Image 1 (cartoon, rainbow, N blue to C red):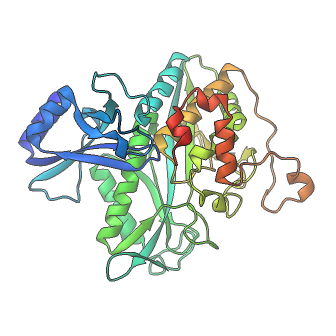
Image 2 (image 1 turned 45 degrees about the vertical axis):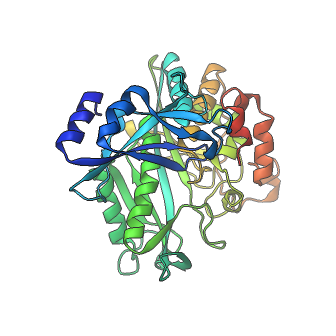
Image 3 (image 1 turned 30 degrees about the horizontal axis):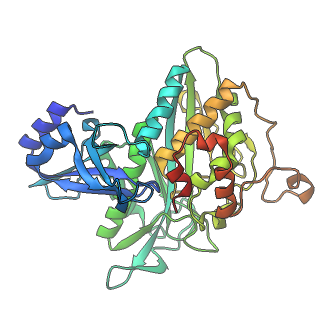
Length: 399
């Protein structure tokens, strides 16, 4: 957690030659501009301009100038770049030329959600579990359709060939100040999972964006391609981004049930942003990906499960999102939905304590389902007053 002065000193004393000013478009894809150390003071004081008309959901050519203002607390060295002539990265806030906050900035949207939670005396901590596939590449370094291995869930080497790659990813994350908790081979061939420690909403979102770039970079260094898409292989397990949320309250009351009820109330309206691609809907309803708006303790066939965890690890786990989601927007929507549940004192429905993948139709026919296509999910979002009160119109229309 660096201050402005500490960043300036670090850059001068640690042989930093390039500073990446990073941000995300509406889809959560990381973008950046690199500046030299001589431009850093100007970046902090005035910002660095960029053409927003070229960024998805950010504007048109008529009023296209926006400015990146680096957040010094997010300074991180990129360990895979040379130690002589270092490269560092900071996430940025986006502002208009007159200094006003740009309302389409995902970090700003999340910051407002956190502020509202704070006003209600509630703190939300997030931790996401990312799944990804490792594929072999061809002689040109392009992805092939051949998974890196044929191992299964929690297999070990030599069947699990991704062990050393995950190890390198974890060490790189630690070097960048992100603490992994566990890593293992997942169910699909070449599929992996790495989980890292939970934190405040903004830190967790920054870490999620960083995590994807680290995985892709380390995979590339090992001659592999890291695929975070929801369904890389049609007949194998899809990639999820299970979002764990813990809810703490200043009033000493456990609001978790109402918070969860709020998520269940608004989940179909949020789905277009938690599952933002056509491919997302090939994953839902299969291989431990949810299909219905239900919850249950420990049950992995549910939309929300309550893991068997104790004390500070107690949480709810939302299992529908996939890695294509913009984490800033996903976390913001979850916070707003949960707060609505708390404000209205909603009660979660009874848990559905059965395996929904093998449940008879007389049970599932009475359950509310998630949208099963992106078109249906987008229609729900466009007709939702809840979404319209949170996200700018450009987010609703961006493709």
